[in-house]
Image (cartoon, rainbow, N blue to C red; front, side, top):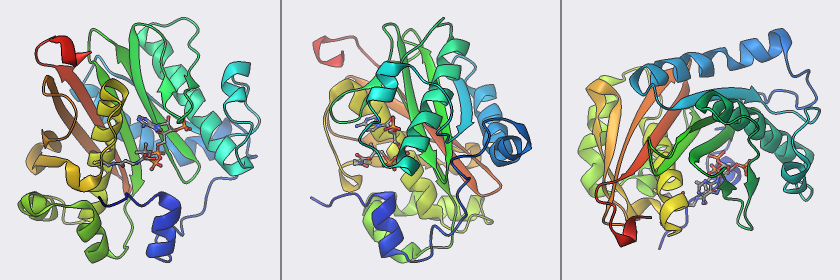
Length: 266
Ligand SMILES: CC(C)(COP(=O)(O)OP(=O)(O)OC[C@H]1O[C@@H](n2cnc3c(N)ncnc32)[C@H](O)[C@@H]1OP(=O)(O)O)[C@@H](O)C(=O)NCCC(=O)NCCS
């Protein structure tokens, strides 16, 4: 079974692919720097929110100076400063999204595998990239699982990425994305974002690990949406998703919903 490359490995596989300067993790948490860095993400999230009003969405900068709950802080003690900044940025974003969804004082710790644990009655997801974090949250009446991924569209080794991420069945979908999004440098990065959002939405329900070639997505490039045609784990789950692209930032979100609330679905 192929192992999914991490961002760090992708940097090794595709030298120069992640050259974009990171936001200084010691930077002030607000102000012009934050606003400028987060503006395209907020625009993309606003577009996605219009299409899914029940899902709350937020963005934040990675930060070492912001306060998070001590139980959240405790999840990050072993992390490098850069990783801790990302982690805290993710906690700031998910806190905002959960508050917008109706939780008064949300705390999101992680389990031993780093999987976020959301407050009772809520689901959510976190992603980060290049010092920015995004998160989505909703009540469990909206979805059984949510997933989000954030990628930056860069001119990487598209051929290798296609081989790693995309199955034969998905090739026509990739061609449709290429045709519908002529300014996108790496359509495979867009598919990667969609697949990771699906993985996150599904894993929090099924706890079943899977790789890129274990899942197949069908894209509707004209409406920037997709659904999961095949993935391991749970026959009762239906997973669909949407994406937006603003200033080369790609955000994909996925919703996993039980078709029938049978015994295997929760
Ligand atoms: C979970 C995973 C997708 C995260 O992707 P990433 O590019 O490393 O990092 P991202 O910034 O996108 O997301 C990180 C966040 O995802 C969340 N996360 C971690 N593991 C998770 C899991 N198993 N399920 C759901 N969310 C998870 C965490 O909130 C994490 O941020 P935090 O540690 O600061 O809280 C990746 O680490 C992984 O395990 N991949 C292997 C499986 C896979 O990708 N299969 C593809 C199937 S199509």
